[in-house]
Image (cartoon, rainbow, N blue to C red):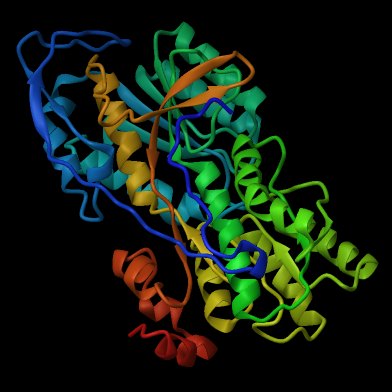
Length: 412
């Protein structure tokens, strides 16, 4: 893919469906250096002010690093516009992204009139209208999480023509401007964690002869392609050597109702299916609803997920989902807000923040990127990750029939 990324290596006896996961983290200090660069629409860069050299690995749940950017925020001009895609394919955009982005901008000292966060509610034309409103309102930076690459590229082309700096947020906008930036998690690593989680769960739940259905995300979403690259790299050796059987890989989707119908059709046609790779929690929940309708018992039929949503976490505790990829969105939101502040102030972001590149195959260019690190969450580490971070409250997570499972997982 031409993407610089950390590599997650399978070790141990893969053919026996075992694996070991090693979590790594890094941390480095923050310094300041003078800068005299200037760029961007409506932004004026000082020639003597110091520019903070922040590190993408240093963002924390308390948003403390954003407070070091108040000086940078005061240097910039123009509004930062944020365009989020929908409220249905994943609960994250309303539950996490919008409030975390707001918190990040405010922690850096931006007032409410200096940034604007919109959700297109699944409509490309609505996002186009929102983008035009931001451009007309004097935005100097635009964060775009597109519904599809074509409409996203059109928005970014219009923004760049108006002198506005562009950041792809979470999804790469294939065909966008060559000088844009991209902020996301390492999405091949996300897929690798999903594949490894499936392998570990097959062993833990004692699925002796796995017959696995691969269910992908929407093929128009570049992230879905990267996720699939990650989990297929883990699972293909099992299919080739024989310990597991690949039943099929139907057309992908991010619409849960479509995922449910697809799985039900596949399960009817192939009743030997006893495991599914599902690329996010909402699709997993759709599959699980079909399993429950067919009286499939807990901890017998592995599914996977992503986003650490409340339903996904509860499905893990109830034994219907092996795990979920937790992408601490407060890290991604802070990285995007910080990058926007540099561009808004006409400053070149430091290489400690812009820590990678991502290939855009449409324009044949590598896009400067900021990657943050995903985490595989199971019932064993749920308390130490999503609960500790406050991504979900214990009251919500442990409500009703999940209470006993929470206690067993040490969640109090």
